[in-house]
Every structure is written in C-alpha cells, then in structure tokens.
Length: 153
Image 1 (cartoon, rainbow, N blue to C red):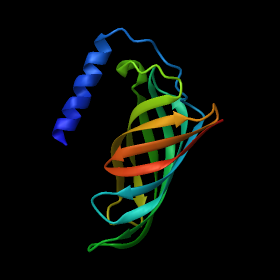
Image 2 (cartoon, helix red, strand yellow; image 1 turned 120 degrees about the horizontal axis):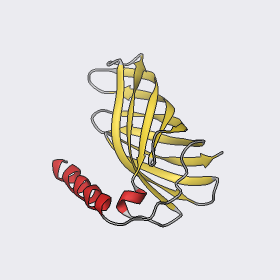
Image 3 (cartoon, rainbow, N blue to C red; image 1 turned 45 degrees about the vertical axis):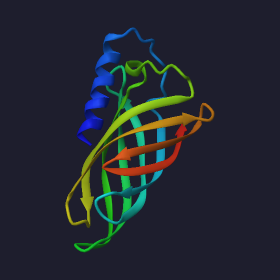
Image 4 (cartoon, helix red, strand yellow; image 1 turned 90 degrees about the vertical axis):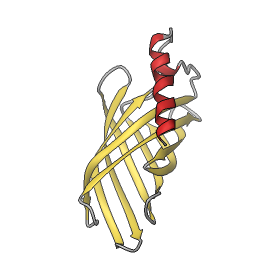
C-alpha cells in the first residue's frame, strides 16, 4: 500500500511540472450515488454525495450521506453517516485530456450515527466515465470500495 501511494505521489509530482492542458471536469451540481463495501469489516451499504462548491481549480466539496449495515465480531447492526466529501480532480495534473474520463482522489469526514465509532472517514482514488453530459459511471477504491452512477444537473 505504501508503494502505491508513493507511485501516485510520483506521478502527480511529475504531472505538475509537465505542460498539461486543463480539462473541463464536471464539478459542482453533480450527484454521485453508489453501493459501498468496506475492506476491514463486513459492511455493505449505499452512499450519495452532491458536489456543491468548487474550492480551487481542481477541487470540489460536497455533502455526503451513507447508510450501511455491519456484521462482524465486534458489531452487528446498521448506521447512518453524514459529512463532507472532498474531491481532487487530477485530470490536469496527470495530463488526461479525454472528455469522457475524470480521475480523482477523494476524502470523507463526518459523523457516524449508531455505529461502533462516531467518526466517519475514508480516503480513496477513483474515476468517472461520462456516458453523456448528464449521466456516467463511477468507481472508487481506498479504505472501502464504491461503484455507482453520477448525474450532472
């Protein structure tokens, strides 16, 4: 895992210093909905986030909510989480200029209601494939996995 992060950091660093053209990624006013699963425990659920603001050239923030069920040795039940999801669209840095693809890193922070830990957090890397201007597919891998759809409003 450490080697993967080092590789991603190296690629991002090289991309910053290379000449890259900016891509018009679909940022604010995007709803992302997906099925989620954790790697460190047996959990399954659904998560949705709505990108509400652009924080910089390649960054967005959105409100996020998840409902998940847990079944492991320590906890069995369900929880509801609310918080924020931050996305860094790395297309420009990685020199990805295909209009159908977005590549991003994301981070979640929030509160987990009715769960063994009240803090809800996660990190990941992912991509979106835009089938049309208003609909696409997304996948994220990191502290968990998510596969779903994305809607541009």
